[in-house]
Image (cartoon, rainbow, N blue to C red; front, side):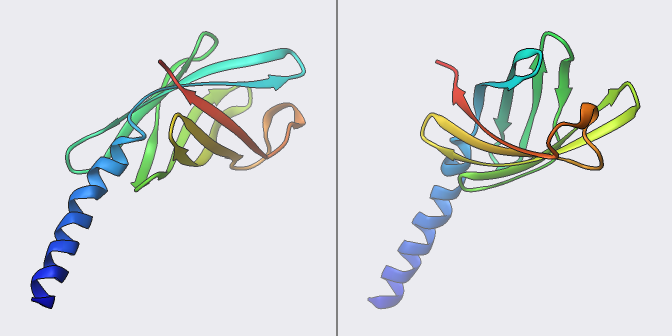
Length: 129
C-alpha cells in the first residue's frame, strides 16, 4: 500500500512540473525608468510540451531579440539576451520567478554596461491581459 501511494505521489509531481513551467508562457510587459525616460519592452515566452523555454524580448527601439540559453525549473527561469550596441556585442543575463501574473526579474550585464548604468537591475513584469 505504501509503495502504491509513493508511486502515485511521484507521478502527480512529475505531471505537475510541465504545468508549472507553463506559467511563464505568454507575454509580459515591463518598463524601467532611465535618465531618458521610461524604457518599455515586452518579453514573450513559449514553453513546449517537454518544458523547453524559448522566446524573445521586443521594443520599439531594438525590435525583437531572441532569448538564448533559456532554462526553466518550475516557476524559476533564466536566459540571456545578446544584442549589438555602439561598442559591439553586449550580453545581459536574466533570472526570474513567476508569481501569478507577476514576473520578478533581475538583469545583469556581462562586462561594463553602456552609459555607466548599473550592472545589475531588478524589476517586475506584468502578464499581458
